[in-house]
Amino acid sequence: LHCAMAAPPATPPTLGLELASPPTDGVTSLRFSGDSGLLLATSWDAGVRLYEADPGSQTSALRQHFVAPGAVLDACFAEAGSTSVVSGGLARAVTRHDLMTGTEDVVGTHDAAVKCVEYDEETGMILSGGWDNKLKAWDLRLPAERRCVAEALLPGKVYSMSLSAAGGARGRRLVV
Image (cartoon, rainbow, N blue to C red; front, side, top):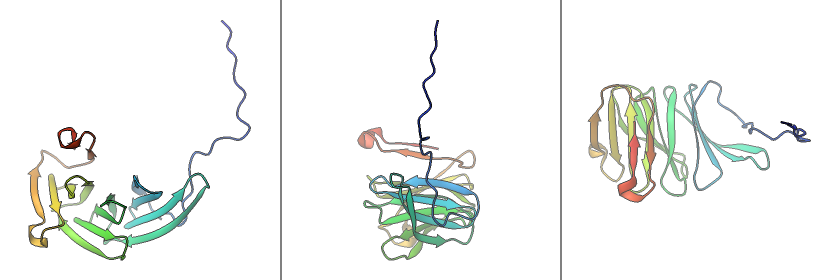
């Protein structure tokens, strides 16, 4: 048996992209937009940051920065075209950030920290999971007092959540 080792590449591959104006404390979540070169980052410094990131040219720029009353644990893009972002964290609020106007509004609240948020493009619903052992579904088309359209009590805190939209309504799955 004879093994030959290939010569190392002349220049090592680039393994990442350094962000302009990065968070000042630990990063809690990262999400790329599915339809643009946008990167969403949340952190313990209470920031929700939106970057224009281009790994090909090794450039990044901070496009928007929202500051929450406490650490932000998760965020996701909401609505087609990446026109808004939804976040949640230690402040117990699910907050919508409008990327076109720079405004933000509280969608609803949990009784403890909001650990996970997801946006369902097919239904237009925001899903949130918290350390209050609750999973909630929010409909932004309704008045504020009726936005929470469903709530489930879980056997423990929500630490992670993933929504799969593959295959239409029959193939959709929410894993908590």
